[in-house]
Length: 429
Image 1 (tube, rainbow, N blue to C red):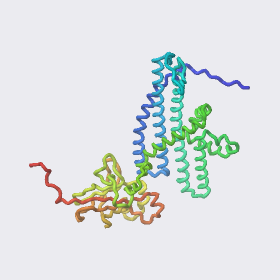
Image 2 (cartoon, rainbow, N blue to C red; image 1 turned 135 degrees about the horizontal axis):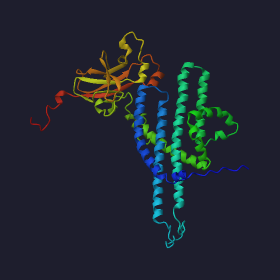
Image 3 (cartoon, one colour; image 1 turned 60 degrees about the vertical axis):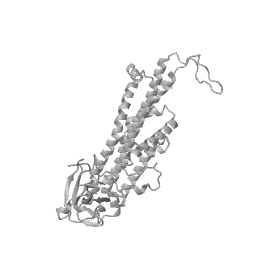
Image 4 (cartoon, one colour; image 1 turned 180 degrees about the vertical axis):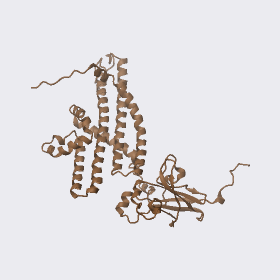
């Protein structure tokens, strides 16, 4: 029988392990502060990225990265709470080193005291200390795992779409489909501590894919430490705790991205709330995002100058996005029809405005687009509706849906100049 190897832990490592709590609290506090700001920065970065580029599956990747951010945030918050409780126990145990006094009256039946005289908090302190180590390890390792899975997913998707369009072979599409199936099995295997790699015969089937996936999913970074962890814990407990923690992280991710993804609130039980969604062709619904006077720190994809108009002109702005390149005709004979402006159509009260002079514009937040100044002096006082859309003639319905061709109605109101006061009340000038 081979003798097991035993290693002497260096003194410097022992000291680090015993006194790491100060560094842990510092790291957790700083990480929580940074991660709260990172979520907003991430949403802003994805918005800018989607304007200038078209990446297949970008929204799925965005949600995976946001999920990774929420895992880190929750993990560090849980670690900080546990370490704070641990510190409280250490302090009270130091104040009363003799433990529970014998003269303390015992609880009467049916209550029973679980603790003996001179019993202290050392055992509980050790348990929570170990728990802190597990939490901070799983937090960081899970974030690395999710990042690696996102990289692997984007790689498979990129090969399937970009190279698939060039090759256009049925056998290639089948291979990509099989790759996605094994991708899902790979995630399942990672979640349940490698049960597929422990199943006889099945190991030969999954090995080629898992070997390649390990290289791109970053599993080689944490493989050994994960084996150390899994061999010393009760697996079903960790799986249950991990699924519960992931559900909580998914919930936070949902609340972080629902406005960006234009999702409704699943916890809003009002039956007719969908009637208030402004991103439809319903002219009786609008959002402040449509009006440039309401833009504070960033512009929207389309907008008019103001909601209540007292002048004879109205400005219309449309942002130029990467997906619009599919509509622009670079081979047109006239230079006018090689640019962006002929694509945009504008109706007011169902009347098409033609021959508008469009100008290239850069907004205050450095967004590129075009702007036109529309004469509206002939319109009557009161409510009007402007429809801004992109000319997608000749495009099939599927392409229109994929590109999200713009078609938005915006209400505005023309004020009568005669109804405006000539001076402020109380002004005697």
